[in-house]
Amino acid sequence: MVILSASGFRGIVGYDLDLVKLASISRAFGRFIEGGSCAVGRDTRPSSIIVSNVVIAGLMGTGCDVLDLGTVSTPAVFKEVTRRGLKGGLIATASHNPPEWNGLKFVFKGRGVFERELSSLLSMGSSSYSASMKVGNYSKICSIYPEDLTSYVGRGSCEGIKVSLDLGGGVGSLFVPKVFRWLGCKVTTINDASGIFSRAIDPVTDSLNDLSENVVTNGCDVGFAYDSDADRVVMVDEKGRKLSGDFTLMICLKYFMEKRRMKEIVVSIDTSMGVEQIIEDIGGKVFYAKVGEANVVEEMMKRRCRVGGEGSSGGLILADFVRCRDGVLASALISNIVKKGGQLSDLIKDLPSHHQIRKKIHCSKEEGKKIIDRLLQEIPNADTMDGIKFNPTEDTWVLVRRSRTEDVLRISVEARSKDEAEEMMDRYLKRIEVLRDAFERRAE
Image (cartoon, rainbow, N blue to C red; front, side):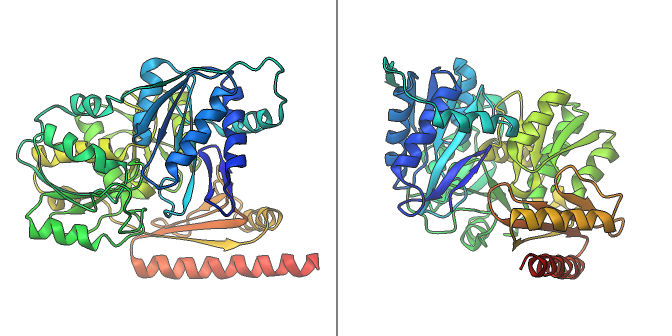
């Protein structure tokens, strides 16, 4: 099933993602940015060179001047678009999806495409060619993102910290070890062969047992695992324990609130309640956005917040560096925090600890809307920013929302303990299944 959303376009290569669709969406994007200059990058999937070449041809055919960055991370493309004042950027990647997937990520004016802009972008795909088609220029350029990131964090600022990097066969294998050495770290690596995916591409879902073992065996202070385009990151502490993405975000946000005197942040509505507890204890304010990186960035711009993120993927966003999730930036900052503050296990022991479970249930979009409407009748005071979110107790929440890309309802729950979260998920999943089945019977 092809997935098309504000964040991008992706599918399974050779099944539902073909060159015709890629060319069409590339031409649509070229028209969307009005033939302006566009950066193009790609991840390390075997099919990415094909996708990238089709994208370049589609863009040039709409008059865009293409600046080809080659194999780079998603944040590197965002950074280059901003630095050069380009109208747009496209990245050939399926991010955290399995290797057989590929697609495109959109960059518009140094940020993602907002939901309200997506319909305009799609409409460009049906516009006809001009008889006097202008062909854009092509040039290869080099990213200086590694140098920018090192300068931002501070060359040598992590002197003596020992890190283990699980590069997952992604673009991180091409530059992340170099960045950490510039920061002063002692570096060990695993899964560092570019384009060879020997674990699940998504570090959130993988057990990361090899990284945990490497951290403990080599006496590392911290371990980091990345996805194929290096915008996601998951941490392992010095004891070899895999930590949730929310801990990545909490450590960074606590640091920025305390050390850089940032008082307001934006996070996605499915982020752990622990973030709000930390920020409010420090005297700050948390604002929420709909799920999705571009939604968080849009709310950050609206409120002029410099920092935000998505807890589920360790997705730190720092507006004064780059306006997208950046796993390498987050991990570099955490290494610096460990250098200054001591062992990672000590830094997280006082952070609020919660347990999240995420599932989905298949139903049509129409049925999904009816289910949410019925839940709203039962829970009239619920938050309706993105589906329905409510608090069964003071220390728990449930979020039910329609997927923007699939015929499913996404259900997320959070509680203090695993047992409580599992009980809550089971209870509301059964309730939703009852409602779905009832609506299906009425439709027959």
